Length: 84
Image (cartoon, rainbow, N blue to C red; front, side):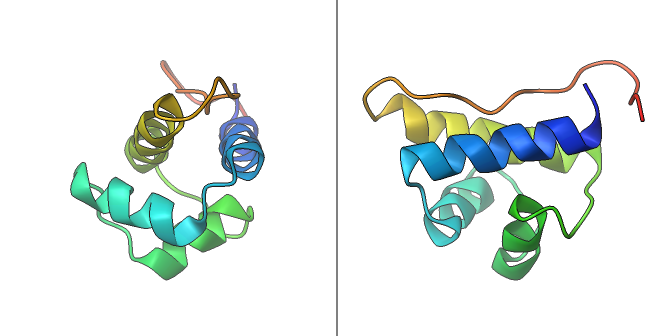
């Protein structure tokens, strides 16, 4: 998986689950995320590249929010070295 693939899967999962960037940011921050709301929204739209740790923290926060909804697509985690 590439950085772009992970970002797109996160955007798609958030979009399909109707999770707003603001709601995602609140939960992301509560699980230890370091970005501001503006940077997280820019990432969701593919305009702000992030390191793997932050991308995975966003995926974790989003997946936890989605777990409380009826079954939906989830964001993908990245393991191992990046493949561009």
